[in-house]
Length: 71
Image (tube, rainbow, N blue to C red; front, side, top):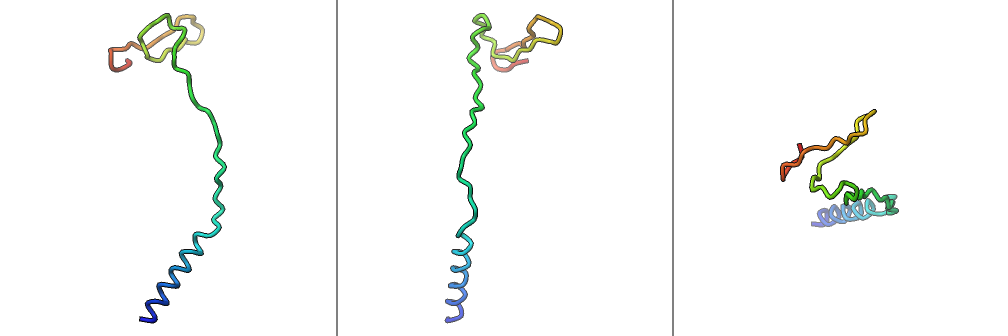
C-alpha cells in the first residue's frame, strides 16, 4: 500500500512539473482578412457568381447562376 501511494505521488509530481513553464505565447495577431462582397457596381444584378476580365479584353466574363449554383 505504501508503494502504491509513493508511485501515485511521483506521478502527481511529474504531472505538475510538466505543466509548469512551457513557453506559451498568448500574443494573438489581429489580421483582418475580410472581403467586402456587397457588390456595388454590378448594375443591380442578382448573379452572385464570380467574374473576371480576360487579359487584353474589356468585356467582363461572369458565371451563370441557376438559382442554387454558379456554373
